[in-house]
Length: 227
Figure (cartoon, one colour):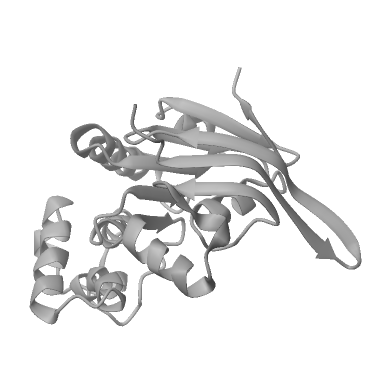
């Protein structure tokens, strides 16, 4: 059998706040196979954001192990983590995080600049990603000229342009209306189903989580399957 995309064992993270230790993660075990559509739920303060930051190589654990595509993430330097993020992980955030004075096409190109991709290739890849998400007529538009749903599609295109193994979507429907929320989730489902992209949804909304094939809950720094 192929190795899991994500393999985490006994992951722990402690923060100090005003001299008090906060145990954000208390021994997380998690395996995610290639091609999964997984939702991770949890209330504010449960540890789900800490877990997402570690999954996305934005933070590191204090102890335990994390392997991404067989690579031992816990032993990497900050520069190695940055390269791994750019190569293997795409991010979609609630607030879109688009550059405000930059066109949709240029926003999507940005990760490829950091990856050292030449101008012609990155322009073509960004254009193809936007066209795939139905934004062929919006390439030159600035974020403030786009609807919330269109901005999130640009953000998804930006996440996909590096051809990542993992897409992390942190409350991806938090800033759009119900109809647009369904459209964004349908895009993520289609990417998972048609292209085999591994998608991890971080959400506190049950109706978003139920679109996933597997749902886990973080509670008090521990991970549990939803009953």
